[in-house]
Length: 334
Image 1 (cartoon, rainbow, N blue to C red):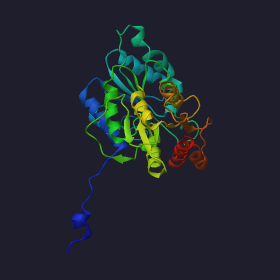
Image 2 (cartoon, rainbow, N blue to C red):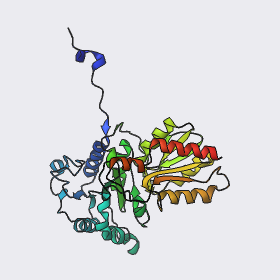
Image 3 (cartoon, helix red, strand yellow):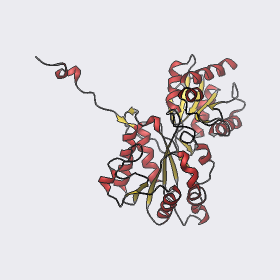
Image 4 (cartoon, rainbow, N blue to C red):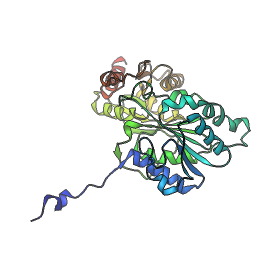
């Protein structure tokens, strides 16, 4: 007599790839592809990183290429920028995006400017890898979304993968880039499973994540999942665009969709004031003012420190229902 586990119906389902596994594979593929790629950061070696994204790389590539550092972001980020200037291609991990404040000088004043200041004679191919986001009761100093602050710096690319495929492919694109790239992961995505695609989009190209007719919803990072939930729950039809990178900003895809729907809603987890949503709203308003049915609307978090209390935290973050309501309100306006 066969057991339930022997029957064809109970055969194990082929496991999908976790977001964090795709990141790990992207790092490994980049290191296999180019021996100049090194990984630098606190506990990235035998410890596998604070969220274990780098697990196994130390054993595979050795301590000369996966380098543990002291708890001194200013020191090791500066050293990584110097290493990039002399021929290596470092991937430097900053545990929390919030900590970038203590090591901004080598990013803001050195890595992003040296190519320009040397008339292209000096390249700084480096990836600043970090993670962001609220929703885990990590408190005000570990939950910030600061992508707009970095996107404001000329010379930096800012990448925010929201899918398993992009976690892998955008990592490879970032490492291959001749200039500095800030690669921002959201820790709420680490356990997410999905198909690892084989037909990647290049860095700088946005993706239509869900087609629709009434409202163009522009988003990135973890907010993509909320927007896709809103697209299923909303009483109106949403076209959801995953930007994938803030810099470069693929306005062509946004404008093409907005021309058709006449309504745009920008959704992000970062605070709404002075954010990337304002930049997108300004560009859409400039290029499509006569074609818009309603003014562009933004939906982010209020400009307050993120609370530790889970209920307060959830109340601040845009969710599927608030996004669906905002989209429906846009349609009701015109």
